[in-house]
Amino acid sequence: MDFTGKSLLITGGTGSLGKALTSHILSNHSEIRRVIIFSRDEQKQFQMAQAFPTSQFPQIRFFIGDVRDKDRLIRAFKGVDYVIHAAAMKHVHLAEYNPEECIKTNIGGAQNVVDACLATNVERVVALSTDKACAPINLYGATKLTSDKLFIAANNIKGDSPIRFSVVRYGNVMGSNGSVIPFFINKKKEGSLPITDPNMTRFNISLQGGVDMVMHALKYAWGGELYVPKIPSYRIMDVAEAIAPECDKPIVGIRPGEKIHEEMITPSDSFYTYDLGKYYTILPSTHKWKLEDFIKEFNAQPVPSNFSYNSGENEEWETVETLRSLIKEHVDTNFVI
Image 1 (spheres, rainbow, N blue to C red):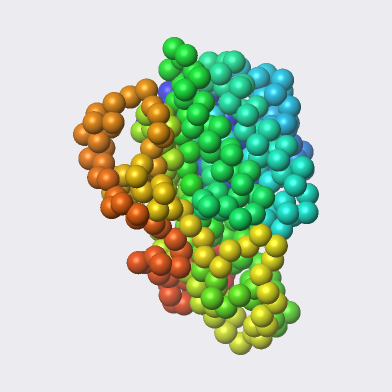
Image 2 (cartoon, rainbow, N blue to C red; image 1 turned 60 degrees about the vertical axis):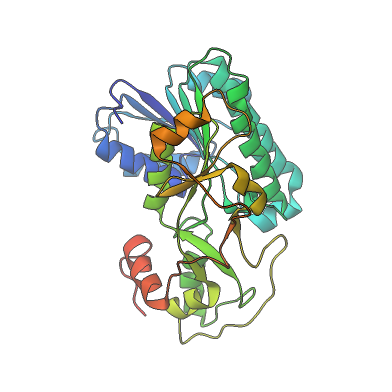
């Protein structure tokens, strides 16, 4: 994808994936005109600016703002070609106890991003989603499902604008802020790793895997697709064993809103789901392009009726050994048992 003369903005750009995206784009697309980091945390912006100094990366800009503020978004989006929407409240248990705040950011913020994109000259939008948005049982998942629907439906109200909205959905990002692996590495020092449920499984994707999927959607989406990666699962007990085999592992019970297994495609989604090779895509029920053209362009294969994709029934699994290698590669280069 050629970024010559283009400007890209990342909402929530100081988060784990935002920083990884920034690094990837600046390293591989030096032709880009601007990369704008839009977030509300001035301290995180200050810290990120030290890692990406303008002397070395003259394309980078930092913009303080909140996705709850539509006027601020419109101002930030002027002159922007591509938007990656990564801003969200994401901690499940905190959303359960602070529902209004989660709704304001994850739903109200999503609608504001859509409106701001339509009010300016943005060409392409990729919104980040989560496996928790699939058949949600918690408020966080419900807000992200609503967000997904808002971005997908935005393709129906764009008029003659060339803008394309798409969504990427994935599992636990290895090493991201608040995720289980850094949590266990830190708890290892105390000699005890709290286990919510020994049967728990999760999908696993690296930060680079998340970056690759966003870049794929940015380049190839026709508008309305929801992309799902083909990724392995892990068992929570294997993660604990990989990090600290010597530690106690008391069972503390699941937290509010948690599932034992996560889903990314339900049987009800299967009627709109296509296999693209590296990814699945759930297509919108209404779209402005011809399905047969899409199938031909991407060699898209329909999945079987009642197909489902969940972390507990996955065909690909991480082992204790592969987890240790991945932790060393993606989370902590100094990691040792």
